[in-house]
Length: 283
Image 1: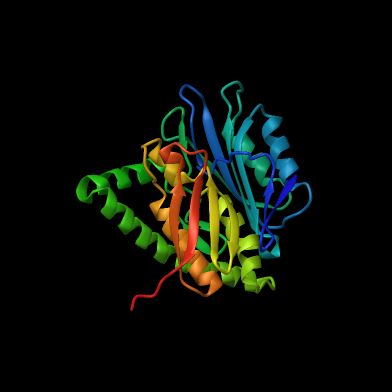
Image 2 (image 1 turned 120 degrees about the vertical axis):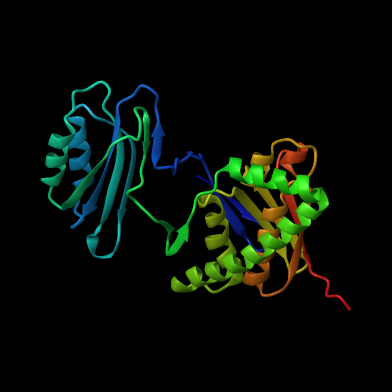
């Protein structure tokens, strides 16, 4: 693990190996025999996941995707997708075996909509923490931005997305402060370091490094989704995320700031660099 100090506040980024994670609860494997199971956990206990995996493995099933969540009181859910192409697994028999595992409640079998295509529609809606979420794929972001540019041009699109992002960032900043207060974090620099930067990464926007002072500072973004969706277009392309960072910083720091882009991967740079400056009040 690498810990990099960021002056002057000492904000840090915990580095190391990034492991891509697939959040989509579906599988596309043409010609393969797929199925999925969704089950309730009525009593969480040590070894329950092992017992589920053993029940599948003993019958020749190959787990492709698995999600476990346990909430207060030890109740939760297990969802997994399996490939049984190379086995003669009987789904009904596996369902009975899963039902017999201590701590497992209702078990639902989910069959593919067509051979080789399985989509989970049993687990809905999706949440991150207490907030409901909808996953937006990069192709949708790219299509929306392309259509905006076609209709109103690059400059107007940049301005519109920046302002939309700013309002989104204000809301995110308030949420970050609420999360921080719940575990005793009050200092703005700690909110940014311990909540904002990690959430930016875990929610899939990108990796961020902050260097801030009373006079402003800079933000470096790596692999941010807005630029990766755009591709190499020869110009800066972080309008939405730039606005989001301006809104988050304004909310968390308690003073209005603006964020300007000076480097961008969409323009061919190795990373995106945002310059943070105090907002000049009109008049």
